[in-house]
Image 1 (spheres, rainbow, N blue to C red):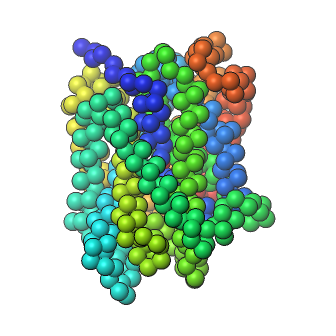
Image 2: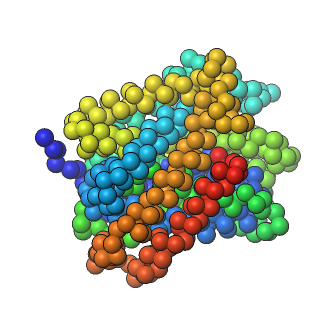
Image 3: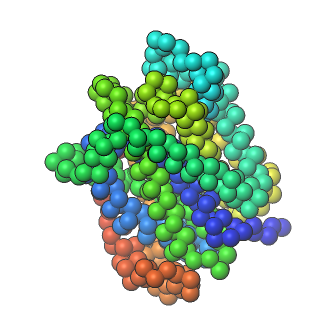
Length: 461
Ligand code: TRP
């Protein structure tokens, strides 16, 4: 009954698909606003240290666990660490299921803003329109929210339906270069703006006196989210790597590209914001809305060639989100195929439809719908959407990530992990002993610190 396993057609295919998974709303939407809230410089430095000391070793661990077993999250963890570890894989699949169900809603907003910005580019930006009101009207419109998220879900299902090399890899190969191109264009234009010097100073000049204490943990939590770690997504992608490819090289490239894009996106957004008098005070009031409230208007009033760059920017957000949603759906689909023996087509459509049921709940979170808009499971988190996000980001990813470090560092033998990482293609900068030290000690201790912080009540969603 078992179907032959599809593989990435080349090392570049894997790197592009995994980079596409990593680069998403986390880079373009979440990172800039948490950098803002934590006062820049010092926070960015701490984030970079977390990426290198925790993110990179765990990225290698997930890829190697996947490649070794050639199975998705549940089967791979069972094989790596023992039968009970299937539960950790299942926890990851559940995290993917929930994360995808609400991520699609924000991805849908990017479609809306793309359509709007096209309209403004041709018809002119309506004078006197409040961007905040526009945002509230769109999130409050139930029919619109359902249409947008349904559209995005169908797009995601359509890609995963075609499988790993013909669906996911192909889309990543086409979209990622476009995404990089658009970002370079936006970066060049942002650097030419009057606020770019101030933006660079804000991002790269650390002042530790200004870093809030929780900022350290927030940086660590975000390094999981942005690299798609802690839930078996990279285990699943790793299971499609063939023996000839170097895991270390791939992990290095994925982590470097994801980090670069997060920084570039932040430079672009802050250059725009610092170029407009009074904008930085205004943004301080609504950092979450930065991407959808502060920026749209600026494209049409401040940014040179904004008429062109505005729609391009929202296409970029939509493409980045799509390469992430396909990897989330792949985690669930691949589990259903491997563990329940369904064909890919049935598994994709079935999983996609089941997830969409929960997307409906998330999409109606902002529309004043009884129960869904007022639900408060976690204190201060109002609505289905916010509670789901809080649960996944603060509980599921860190706990999943912790157990993955234990599986790779303590349950698997030295010779097993060594032979996976030193496969003859590894780059010169890689040192196996250092990796083993980080995965056994540094990463689990850091992750345990996040979990303890969450238990004692620090919120970093
Ligand atoms: N990394 C994605 C982003 O930055 C979000 C994400 C978290 C994700 N975990 C994932 C994407 C797992 C795909 C698979 O937006």
